[in-house]
Length: 297
Length: 297
Image (cartoon, rainbow over all chains, first blue to last red; front, side):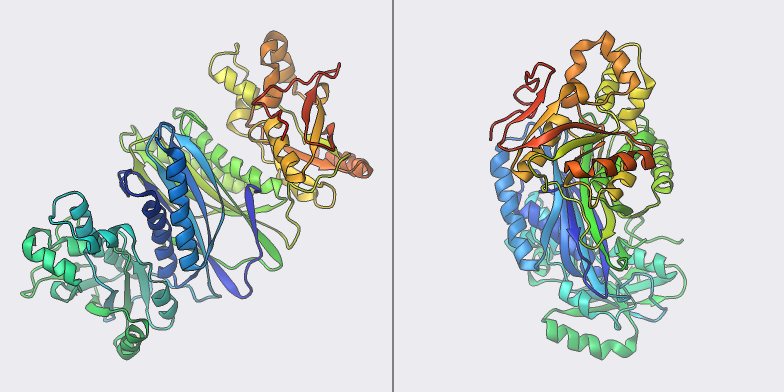
């Protein structure tokens, strides 16, 4: 294979580029199954494309493999199987890449390339004061899954662990939000952190009602036994749901979209003038602590 | 900044993608000046674009910074200065990226994006038996520069060290080779290894005359004192010259091109039927050793 890939760009489409790096024992566990590491690396980048409203086209991959890695060939075979499975699932292909050795942890860097109709890329900076704030799916699952993996939550709940290992990039949703959403991003760092990005880009604040944040049945059940982990719902990352804002007059369109996609789209708050960001309990107390996204700019 | 970059592709151009990862103390020294690390990471990828005949458009960058790094802010500032300097020099821009922490060595991954006229990308697999083999510039400088850095060659020769730290991607040359060269690649791993790629892609062998390989004045002088390092001329990497094949009837065009670009383009051998690859001394003895690219397929 040539080191470089050649692409004739699709007509009348803009290209979207995203790049994410993942480091073992920071973004995933070195002993996670290799196929799941591959699929997560891919899906994290697909989620970035989803947040732009893009369709996946292809990706480039760089892997730094530890020089003392055991079962290197087996690992690569399993990793490749994970890549191929998700290439098929998302209809995109590997454009090229590079494999090198490292004396440090396994490190993966993916550059994802997607396309949107020219001028149709979604942005995160278009929210207006008064816009509703929506979230797709449910939040907190991946962070609670991580607590299951680390042994802090028992018994292990496999649904939650799966959400951590194999997130679902919301590509179909992202592709339908043009003309509906005013700002979009994917929740990778946690709701508290990611709403801050929308607020900063739009020059606004936000008020989110904690009791409106949608939970999965599994998360709801686990939190009954482990109420101390409740703030993971907004502070935990890795859910890769889409967080978006929209004016109230498109609420009906969003409801229809949720039905079409068979994906819950839940109104959890609204954008406000000023710069304050709050995740409020039923009595109006801000549950956000310093470092969880609450900040006066 | 949004995580993703949007690009309206230039009309009637193909896009070229390349990706290279660099790991500290494997591809560069962790204590190399940060601006030079940045420039090398960029130029290595620009060299891949040069070998495709492409013009640089933009790049994405992922950096994994050691979590215990001292003077992190200073380092980033200097690294960024290096990026900016070469962005200006090569007329391209940063499309986006990701910065993460690692418990391992500093790791840099660059995805470079270039453009060529549609259908005009150069490939490495089009050589024919009888084609001449050419190399741009001089070989061995970077490998000898590395020996200066490591203290194996004294006194340190700054010209050679500069060739190691700041290679010159041969973009102008690559852009002129369409219609002249039948196969092109950049010499990153060393002549012996890289001619093998052309041979494998073209299904041919090669005979190179060792005494025709062009040396810089600095390399020639150093090798007088350190003749044991002579095989670095073909086994050492990092020169990032272009290695290309061309039929003999375009020899005049290549001579003119060398004058136009003020860059030496030296005929060093020819492509042969069969699969044998040789770098021959004046009495016809093959100087390639096993592991230096000599192999019967």
